[in-house]
Length: 94
Image (cartoon, rainbow, N blue to C red; front, top):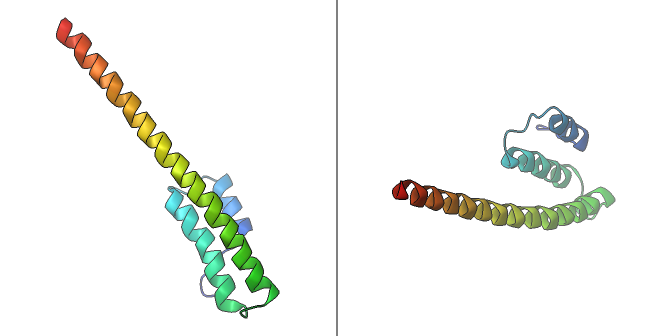
């Protein structure tokens, strides 16, 4: 019996119902699928190997998205900082 079950249907349902409050929660559920796959299937079995392939693809996409998110966060901070500087400059001229 799987102690902590997780599947893509459940993840999809949680996404549709806005149950994830962070990216980390989503990632944790995805990683739980892979851990269960490796724990409950024999090394070299078709399911185990499919899990490895899916995890590899997930890692690639996940890392690309995290890099993009960090870049967007830095850009947003830069824009906000520039806006604050402009506001300060405007206020000091009054």
